[in-house]
Image (cartoon, rainbow, N blue to C red):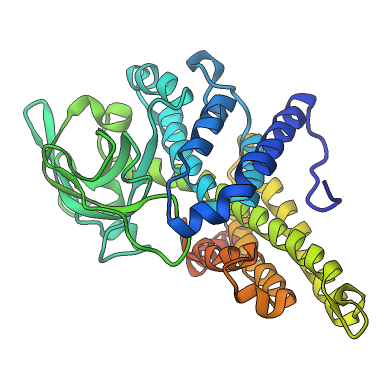
Length: 401
């Protein structure tokens, strides 16, 4: 392990968990990631291995069969996993966000029913806000749930579900207008529904269709899908928290911790890119010496290492603030924005260090070059992060009078 991206103040338990995950990444993920990614193959063996390690229950309380660890521990594990293959961290992240939302906002019955199975990895989670026509404008969603007896009937189309096919539980945000007078702000008439389904594609239950995998530039292996609801009946007791109209706040709470996760992914991918760049620079010779001895390459490595260290520090700060019970939307937005931008830059510099070989699918950096852009748009684009950051800063620094 190198000197970069170390975290001070960890307990012995945290250090042991991270060492175990890092060992798993080095032995079970890195050797097979590029081959699986090129085949766009779901990493079944890797996921089963992480399930055995207890990663799916990392932040689920011990009373529900989880490890009861902090967001910091989880984020540092994600950083390690993304260093191996970012797609695997995506499989974990969507599951974790749904588990977190149920832990924070679910009814006692929902917690008792879902969390033990999620901790064991027997139920795999996905969540869905976006729709084909709205992107980051969550308040404009058109998917709708209408109460019909003891169930809600859901209609609409959702987009960009990570784990859409392999998941067995999807948290879906829909508009519900009953009980909300005309003129109610859009975000106050939204509800999160917990939809159980079978894994797979096609009509996975009456009224619910997962059409198939979206073919992507990168972020392969993990299935990204649409979700179509056409008269889907969901029992009223599967409204998250048991009360309608709270869905927007529940989802934003989940996305806030998700942004720490995306920052951690950026840190992990950037670390791997630095490792690959530093190693190649010492092996490749030009003009009679390793290219690492050329000042131009040393300058690149200096910039890359500094960006890796800065992104890691901001990610750790955002996680620790959330763990302390304080609001962290500013820190999470900053960490996600900086880590994803720096990740793109570090990967590109590693790609340049590799020269022509960086363009070859034989070298790992080619995969990282296609994966990094997803971080610029996942969990809110860079532009959305800057809007959040700007608004929060103006709240903090508002002039008086």
